[in-house]
Image (tube, rainbow, N blue to C red; front, side, top):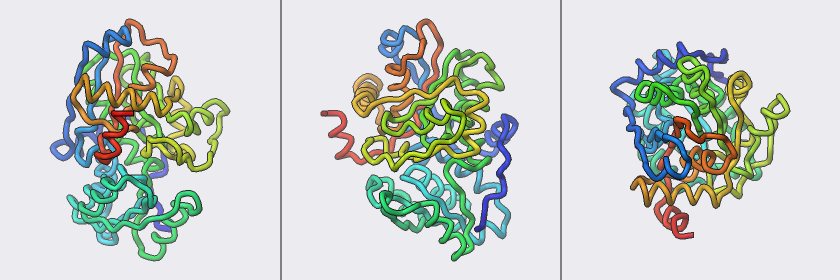
Length: 326
């Protein structure tokens, strides 16, 4: 297999270097406030709006940081990845910007808008049945057949470092945070956020938030080893339907995460409605994980300065309308 060479866990230095690499390429997304959120949580809440990032999610940061470091030979051969949608879009856009061929392996039931966006950015899309096929095995086979470099969504040092730049920017704008919440799928966002946060704010408590029916990360931290679960089809948080944490991410989470809490689909829809009604922004179910966790995860945030990473805003409009009306 054409394996990614960066298998050593990244550090905060890598996050800082990624921020320089992304300057002028990735959007420096806004940090928004809400008096209503402050009142509900009894805290000062700061929302890092990665739903307004290029390609619609924080994933662009890691994808571009990884692809920008490839050798000319690797760029010519092209890259491939597997993703439920946001990493696929991010790889596709980063590859287009860098003139690199790209292929993405996506579940056949991925949101239509995410699949269409990956194709519109120029990537070839290969679909699979997540209940009966292994996306990583499919990706490894395609990598061998086509000579393309596999860039996984979380088990990749350069990707994790790039994801951490969202938290780094938040800390630069809000120098003191007591608590930070970030959604968890494969663990790349939470791992990168930990690297950036603990370097600047060692006492800040960092929590991950998973869908209630996809709590493999919570189980993994509890037992001290990676737990694999069946494909969690039932959750609306399609971007967090991972079956296990990425090993690189897990190693980082073990060293610094305060914990991982969960949110139900009903709580995600409540958070999405809050964003739409009170803050006038579109947030996808996975993007609402962090707020749902802060509201319902049982973490003590009263009187604290709380960072919330809104991870993405890519959602089919018909589904979005149903989520808001249910």
